[in-house]
Image (cartoon, rainbow, N blue to C red; front, side):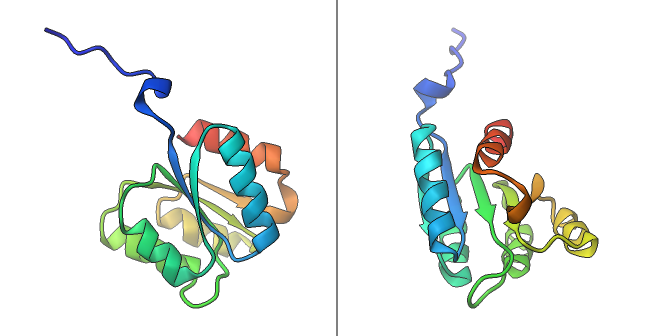
Length: 130
């Protein structure tokens, strides 16, 4: 007997990990994503983010690159070495081509420069990636 495919609503909310040390932005992202029906968790340090990401229970990670402690590139390296299947969108103020290229080499889904992207656009990118 074939199993019916679950719709997104039946499958439950998608889980997003926001690794961001700028509290106002992290809070705004958390509110916006929750309002859109996502289940969110915020980590404000690299260590906390890496620990949470390692649980593997997230559908998507929004990752800043400049963090206290462990930086975002180290988190990407760790996720890659553990063969993580979790999609990652980098959300950083590092806009140089070499930073973007380095992040893309780790297989990130997208790279957004915070200062250039409104919150609504971040939500749209997340919707396309989840």
